[in-house]
Length: 138
Length: 427
Image (cartoon, rainbow over all chains, first blue to last red; front, side):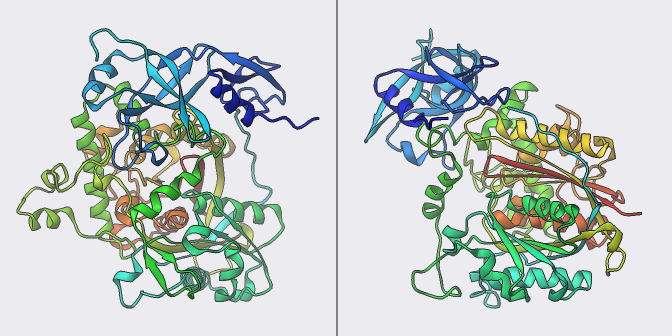
């Protein structure tokens, strides 16, 4: 078994605005972000796959005094939320563009469509998400 | 996630001794100021031995747990650095570190050790001196003050470094589950606030009766100090500001210095010692990284399923629940998830006072993390201490009223680790 670089390839992918995941060779579930093995069925082997980045936002948790993210202190309006990509994978993420003011209204409209934002940090590209345009919401 | 299987122990194991320091800020008390990790752990260990009627020479092996020994104690081999304080020079030991779940893992490891037959009498202790920081090139009794600015950046050490930190996926935890609950059962933000404040109130009422607890001033008194007659008015006022969307100041656990220990042995030997033995029937375990959806709920569900299945017990058999509620909503949410309270209805039981230490479905009779204090890695072991004390009927004025035979503990920490032990009195 050859040791394979997965983390580096994932971040190289983000730099090229591509989302790489791994697909289980037995059950077909997606590992995102990518890992060697499948955590849905517990099978040992997965293979590379590219994801669309399109999906839905299922929750909005505002960042406040005690749960703000020291890595992202430069971000102005962000929240956390549960993201589900159209390939079926679910995970927590940082969502840009949600403010205390519009959060209440947006919450009532969940789930809402989202798309990826490839965000440049010093030395690497990271991945956040952003709501697609919502009618009636700034 | 992939489900786990839990079997029965090869031999029955019981808790025969417990010991604990108060949870406190040592620098605030001239009699405590200057005490070190070794002294705190050693004191709790010797208390547990005295409780059981044992000498250090009788202990075969020990476990040492701490959430973050490199940060708080600048120690990479903390088990070696406490061993001689309680007469264990030369004996085998190991350190483990599972953030705020360490205490529950400490119980699990000790029980599995004895159940395997490797050792007969095993001590498991945890310590965290979480209210100060080590000073370079100074001995351990000299420490410097710690601030939120020191702690917050260090908290990211619990998150996966390959993905979770960089993708901003690890900070959702404090409000995530209560937000889900609120939406599922259509509660208003004000209703959630009232339920959390009622839990704060009842927790403090219990802590006021507990000499080991850190915050013991009843909310009646705190309210009076600012000219209010109603403690609930105080709890929902700007004297108790919001720190997240749902949590107020009183919904977060204050950091503490503290240590606690248990001693376990085969149940068949347990009658030889001083105290009524408390059997550990099983311990469910599940872990999920912080990026995974609703991870506290999912691992609580899975660990509870395992321990119910392995022991053949059901939620109706549980008389007392301890929940590591360093984020206050966990108390209610975990109680419903393990079936101790009815789904979607638990908040009403809280409002009716039924989950208070003197209610018919008691939770956290020691005051809960937000009043008892949170010495991170030691908190779980302090919960085990309390559960054993309650099952023995030795909890004094805060003794629960339903004559408990069986207790469940929902251990949780680091946002990732869950252990659910069930303890029962031995007939």
